[in-house]
Length: 413
Image 1 (cartoon, rainbow, N blue to C red):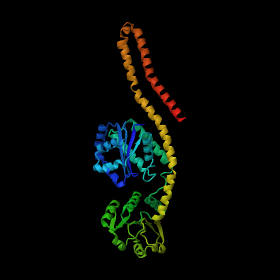
Image 2: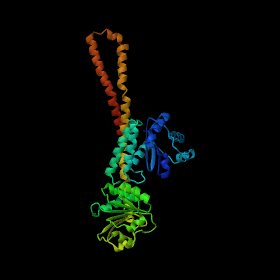
Image 3: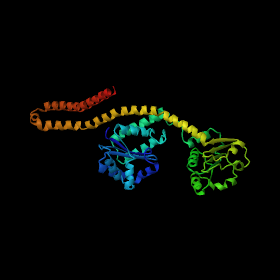
């Protein structure tokens, strides 16, 4: 276990914008890892990069000294000036042995994510491992570790509430919207085409909404989102001239104050009197308070959603202890598996060794004696030797496993 190593650059010590310099594109990954394995004699390795971490996981007899990590980083050929590379060396987190194993389990269970409970990290780790496995960069140890890691993460996500309650404004807003009985394929006005509205609109499209119209201060940005949603886009200055009506408004702009007052809202209604839905995700709100006072509206606004998100975040953190208990139990179960696997690998040589001893005994040491035996006696002797050979191959395997089990039970007590 002491040969498991992790070299990690994460959001805890590195600015997220700087992590991008350490990301390796898929086209270059194989060549860089081949160079790393060959020059540093690393038997098994895989690399993972997400929006908030870059980590190298490997199995090898190397001490994670400053000199080794500096050599490691240089051989990865990052396009970073030498002085900047030195800064990264001061921000690295290194893990060895059980500490590395615990870190990898915690990471895959999202306990160390920027947002605790985000299940996407497990999929990211699995994809990263599979890519390196298919390229031949991993081996027996990392295979066994990944099997147990996936099992552990699934148990954490199944038996705790660490990922149950949504904490993103978009997912919370969508849940609130689902509670309202909408017309089939409602007319949706999207005001603002920033990241929040992009995510929300794509979320709605995924759930089979398709009747969108987009308004944005910069028309070019609106058109990009409109292309994805297959809808029309207009500059925000044209909003007052829109006469097609709506069922839902989703608004999130960077305006310093409200952009829809009661007069504009009446214009957008275009004489319709049914109760509308307004999702206002802007800070400060895009909808003027007068609109809410004078109209019948299902109103979903960001401050209320943030309060729910904060409560859900706290509930997720309350699940950390339960998740850590599951991780600890799986690590305890995993260690004997690794020991047993070592025994199995070592014992692979036993049959060949016994066959070598037999051949020497029959063909050299006792060759003269055997030549004096009659055919019937020689046949019986060979049957005895064959029987003993099979038993001698099996006995050490069984004994080694029994000793391993006894030692494991002793360690537990």
